[in-house]
Image 1 (cartoon, rainbow, N blue to C red):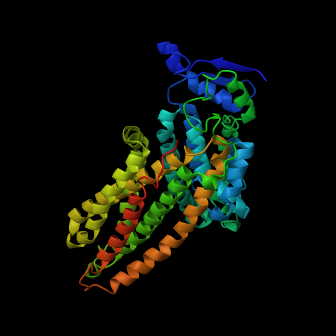
Image 2 (cartoon, helix red, strand yellow; image 1 turned 90 degrees about the vertical axis):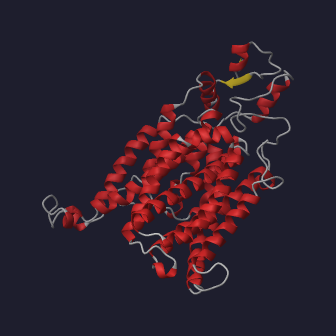
Image 3 (cartoon, rainbow, N blue to C red; image 1 turned 90 degrees about the horizontal axis):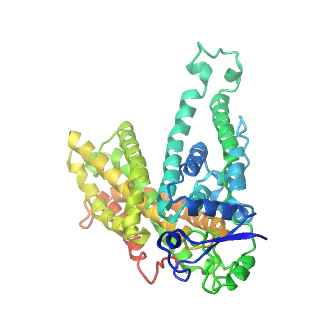
Length: 448
């Protein structure tokens, strides 16, 4: 098997010794090495690859997900064994059928976690936060576009009788038009995805170890990232993920914050529409929709333009800590907003909602980066499967728990300690505080 050995960029530019800047081994018949060679020679942002990731996620982001917890591990293992690209192509193919007769286990393919893993692998370390942010942005847009298309295009014979007659095909199948349109979009994305570069290395890690032993001053590292084709003598290629504490600790913290965020989303809408006499805001459903839409739009801008430099400045763990600390006084102020009315109330609620969602996004995205950098590339799919499975269980509990707590709070409006909705946001803060405390050593351990 032929391979090339080149010096790292820092070594070439500063003429350092290989002992300080290890050489890089590239195998000719390895797609992962081909992508790593491209990253090594091009330090700029990979716009084309990011565009592929963005458009693929946008296409599938509007699809409803079921069976996620039961199939996450399966598709993660498939992605680790056969590559990220085949799994992505299958996920797009699953929405190509006009009538959407999709098998239940295919829905797992439609979540963005494999795309996030791919976005981490397709770029250099300094661009990881941008890649993950683009996936989240496309996913959010997809969740907006999907329901909008369904609402505008469903039952076209009734909504647009001048274009679609009552005896037409679309009158007999009133929901075919939006499904067909999404399928056409998916077809275009599927064809474009055929040119996606594969990031999974297909050479034997033992071969890399044999090559490395020829020069004790050389370590195998393609781009400075754990998991991008590297092999370290002290790392077993098939290490048990459940014994990988940096991974498992980040997943546990991720589940706690996911529980908090899902419960908050459930409680916020209930609190906003409840009457002011019960500590709510007396908002209409339309008012709540405007707040959520405004927060979503602002969040998309923040993810693309502001989160990457913040993550590079503070690092993932410090970003989580700062965001969690800022979230708690913000949540504590929510119950007192009911004493405000009119335009000031709407301005304050919109700002608070946006800030809360931004802080939550910082936490979740930073935890995702920690998880993916805690495992080698050949285990990244399975690691994401474990994360999604655990997170799904916590998210399944959160809405019911949030509703029960909110209902209980309405019965204690005159309690001495934390009356009414104050107890709701106090409990949310307790969950947030639990997550924050777990973000410190010895519990949360950064990747080695």
